[in-house]
Amino acid sequence: MLRKRVRLKTEELRLVNEILKALTRYENLNLTFDKVLQIFYSFWSIEAGFIALKDAQNGKLKVHTAFGFLPTELERAIYSKGEGITGLTYQLGIPLYATEDELINKTGLLKRLQTKKLVFFTAPIKVGDRVIGVLGLFVDETEVPKEVEKVLETLSVIGSILGTFMELKAKNELPINLTEEFLKKLYLGGELEGEYLFAFPSRSFQNLLKLIDRVKNLSFPLLLFGETGVGKTVLAKFVHLLSDRKQKPFTVFDPRNFSKEEMGKKLQSAWENAKGGTLVVKSFHLLPLEDQRKLTELLKGETRIIVTTSLDPLALYREGKIVPELYKTIAVLQIRVPSLRERREDIIPLVNFIFNKYRNGWDLNTKLFPEVAKVFEENPPEDNLTGIERLLQRLLIVCGNKEAITLKDLELVVPELFRKGEPSRELNPSGDKKFTEQLEEEEKRRIIEALQQANYVKSRAAKLLGYTLRQLDYRLKKYGIEIRKRK
Image 1 (cartoon, rainbow, N blue to C red):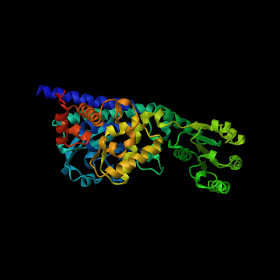
Image 2: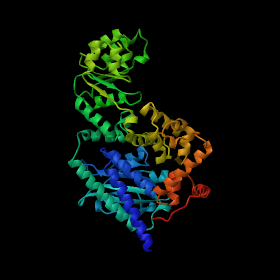
Image 3: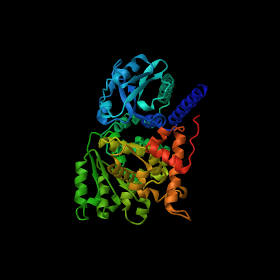
């Protein structure tokens, strides 16, 4: 019994430690909470979870960040004090544990997941004695830790940590967080196509957003340049929606859609349609020189013009591909959008965001395991965000009916991601080793990592890998992997 209690204590400390690390990693609150829910999934294999916060206007609880829910289910996830187990936790300020029979199932989640028997854990998110939110976790009955009281005690500690974190964050708010409400709307299914662009935690992209926040209302034209697929057009719309022009038209003109003979008329028409709002001219360097001069004249009007290019604007100017009067005007305010290779810490949050966006939109229940997102981080596609979105769409189309998408699925459906990267991770023949031997070594390495992450609980490791328990046992024997005693 003593050994068991020590093991449980160690696992609880590991859980709390991982959450503390997550709280120091991101500036954006959505990303922080999303990571917290991912950690719970890694430790307890939760089927769904949410973090709901108090609405300052009506005092009700509204979901801020969620995992495993459909958008329609989240719309119903609003709780008053005393309403259901969530509302009771909000009212009493204590952690609670309930079986399915005790839940009101307001969201409809239980009906959708009726093939599984779930239990529900809640914990208040507190600042001192004041409850500001609730953490809720749905766990498969077969995965529930035996010492429920220990779990509730641990969740109570984590709720207090989250509350303290939010209070400290509020007192040390950074300028970019002035757009927090906007980001929140986007995260819960906002109006902006490509909204995941603003879910990035890296310092370089946060600095970019701070710069955007400073120039949003200037009358100067804005030049955005960066590699193909980094989201320049979406960033331009972000500028528009943050500016005083947000109630006016937003128009995008792409020279690639027209012949050289009609570009001038189409450009004039687009400018007239965007009157008083924002006109985005994509790949502006493709405009004939005479139309570039026309664009220079349009810059003097009341409409804000944002031009974009995937090439180096200074090099284009030196090569004579941009007329001097246009370049001198747009060069006053130019911003380079960094590629994903330069900010790899953005990739895993981006992959998870895009995956959940399409999974929920297509009404799929499949999961994406962390090792899949890791491959994108190590080998980002050349066309950046556009590439990741395209590859994840392909992955969901082919594997969306599976319970979980694993690394093997990624290897079969998106093999191009494995043709780059570090030599130690490549899955191509090299030296004297056969390709099948490399695959087996890679599989063995992944199994060992999953076991370590799951604290050598085989059922959890199997879920992380996308295997059944029998399939995992077979591979353990095949590779001679020893199951260590849990700490």
